[in-house]
Length: 425
Image (cartoon, rainbow, N blue to C red):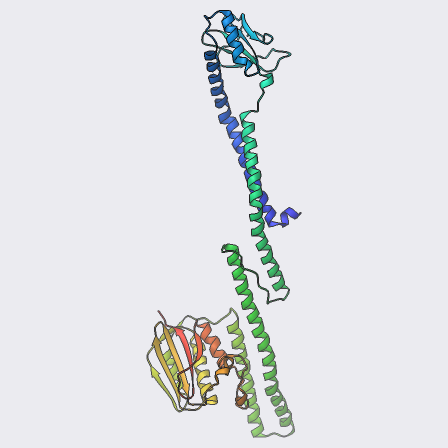
């Protein structure tokens, strides 16, 4: 059923049904609690005004007849006036049925035993006279009918005005649904227009942000898989060749080279797995208080011509990952730069700043954005051991700790790579 499948129809008809319910409840309440009192009050007023408009009971009969004529002729009604003994005094039109003997004179009463007449109503004046009126030609709508008609018109007007707003709201949801379906079909470049500033607009913004992250993650994994396949092929080929040669002739040197190839392969796989973990939501716990100065002191002792300076800076994070980031920076400085290597740990505002500086030839400005990409190696560094994952991992580790990594422009010779992390508060 189309009504159940279309949100805008459900919202729209909910509004209409609510308005109709208001109309019915208002009419019912008025009919139960207000109509009776309203009619009673109106009948009392009309009877009193009629009595005041007619000549008094002591006036001559012709004067009373003339007064009756003047009163009812302007309303196009038939009426009769009786005395206290229910004898006809005057009539405008054919005489109406006289009151019954047991008629009660309190308020207006409908004459129930009248044939050939319209609704005949009777009332008794304070002076004892009776007044009868035929409302056949003066039938009007009940007050509640007018109220219901008015509320029905209001409902139609509100319904007509509400439709474009409801349709616009659900139209945005339908466009968002279309975007979700496209993403589900594999089109990760899909984005939806952010219309307005309400919750639907926030949902569209969240959708675009999420889609962008998914697209980036998928593209990164695709690139990682392609590059990993390429990089794994070389050590695997060496391992296969070494195994075949060892089968033919045992050689200690060749066996040592084979073990080295296996070690490189194991390291490469470890780095690929770590990158994959950092790209997903299953990141390692970042709940440790890490002293960066102490950590840098431990890592710097592993290298010759490596000096450390700075102050104690604590951050919240993962000791193993931060150790891996520092080790990668130091390895990169010794492989691609030139000793001596200097490490500094400083406080700058609310950030802890780690700088690793080497005295190598530096990195071209054009390559500074590329060096943090997975498997990237500069054209003049192709023959150096490594797979181009070191700085990429440093960047991922820094971002996992809500920090950033960059190549600092110190103006000095060599290269300075800087990690900026939020201090522990």
